[in-house]
Length: 252
Image (cartoon, rainbow, N blue to C red):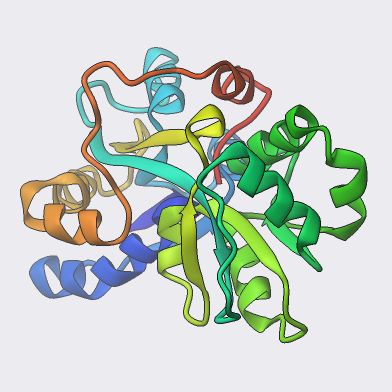
């Protein structure tokens, strides 16, 4: 069975592959990347039984007949945060002033693609809003998705490096730890869903996988790695709205 998956859910999918094989006998062939990359691959006809991307994109693809209506399952909401290796003292990022000072002091800053990833696009907008894009951009290292960015951060042994990614990607990367979510003014929280492709070659197995990854059996696991319960009416900060406009940003 083929799964196209946004980077924010990569660790969760990998953790469940063996469980799904044991329960169903079906082996999962997974492909990961930014939501933009996964959307493009899906629309180009890449093999796909289950697509895991942002909730708005799932709704768009269902309306277009590309994903089966009613087949979706919400994994949860993922916030964006900053990470660092084990250096001490740990910088603070809980206020706008702390965030600005921490970013200006960083030796290198790792993030996802600032053109195709929601977290990356949002980060670029945030730097501009803080008025420090000219100072930080020369030290910015952009990777295809947040998972790749966090791996590069973990491998950076020079000290003083930071990374910005979705919290699930930070928690699944060994060698780094979460400094904190972005302060309220710049919060980015993205809801992820899994849904069955209208052209799924194994639709029943696909539905079972959606039930597993988004269902009650894995609720605790999802919470432990950073997927939060979706609020009924989440706030939409202005910066987030910019980042989430169709075509302007997708998710990592």
